Length: 454
Image 1 (tube, rainbow, N blue to C red):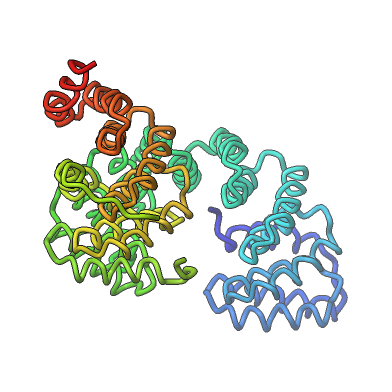
Image 2 (cartoon, one colour):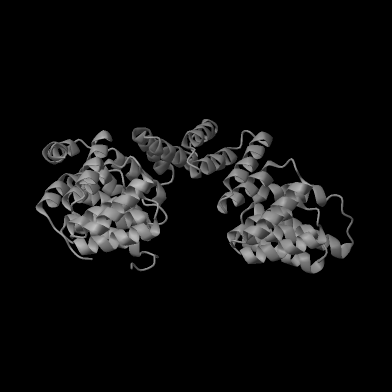
C-alpha cells in the first residue's frame, strides 16, 4: 500500500507553489509546510498542531484538513480523521485521495457500506489508480464478496503488476475461497519480488499445509517467525503443520507459544487439546477444549436397549474413532463444532457417555451438515442403549454422505439385532462394498444363515 507520506508529498508539491498568499495566508502556508515536515519526521503530534494552526488561519484550504486527517490516522484517531476528510471533500469534492482514506477508515469502524461508496467515488475520479481497486477489493473480501474482490484485485495487478501487497491480498482471497493452488502461485510471485514479506510467507505456508505439503509449510512458517517473532498466528499455523507430521510435542510447544502471545486464541487451545489427547493426556486435553468452547462463545445446551451383539460389534468403530479417523481434526473452524465433537470423543473414551452426547448435540446444532457428527452421535447413542436414536443418526449420516461405510455398518448391526434382519444384512453388505471389511465377518456369521433359512 502507498503510505500516507507519499501522498502528502505529492499533494504539497503540486498545490502549494501555485497559490498566491497575502501576509496572513503566507503564515498559514508556513504552518502547512511545517506540518508536512513534521509528519515526514514522524512527529505526528507536532504535525497535528501545525495543520490545526494552518486551518485556523485559512479554514478554506482543503489540503490542510486532508493532511491533518493523515496525522490523526497515524495517531489512531479514526473518527477525527473521518471528520477532517469530510471537510476535505466538502471543500474539494474531486479529491480521490480523500475518498480513499475516508473509505479505509470507515472499514476500521465496520462501515463497509460507506466505505464502498467512497471507494466507488474515488475510482470514478481516478480509474487508473491501482490502490483504489486494491482497497475496494480488501473491503469486498471483508464482507465476503469474494468474486468481486478478486475482480478488483485482478484489475489492481493489471495496473501495478509488481506490487507485493496486491499479490499477497489476492492470494489471501483465493485462500479464503479454498483455491489454495492459486493462492500458492500469488504468494510465490510476491516472495520472488520481496523474499522477506512475512504475510506472503505465512500465506504460502498455510496454502502448502492445505495442499498436504506440511514440510514446505514448516519451512515458510519458520522463515516468517524469524521476521515476525511476536505474531501468534505464525506459531499457531506452524503447530498445525507439525501436527500433520505427527510431531505432537513440537506442535504443543508452538501452541503454548501462541497462547502465551495471545491468551484469547481459542483455536490454539483446541489444537493443543488435540495434541495432548494424542499424547495420552486426556484430562488436560479436555481442559483445553473446554476453553476453546467457552472463550467468547455462548453456553452449551428413550428407552435403553443393550445387547452383547451390538456392544461387541461397536468396538472396531470405537477404536477407529480415536485411532485413525480423526487424527487430522486439529484446526478449529469458526463455528467451533469440531471442538464439541472432539471433546465428545474424548469424554466418551473416558466413559462419560452422557456428557459426550451433550457435546455431540451441540456440535450438530452448530453444524447440521456434518455427516461425521451424526455418525459419532449414533455410536454414543448406541453405547447408551438408544438404538432407535442411533438408527436415526445413521440415516442422517448416510443421507449426507452416501459412502459412509461405518454408518451403514452400525445401522446394519442394530437393524439385524432388533429384528429387521434383511435390512440389516443389506446395510452390512453395503458397508463391505465401501471398504469396511469387518462387515464381512458379521455377514459370514449371521447373514448367510438368514439367507439359508429363507
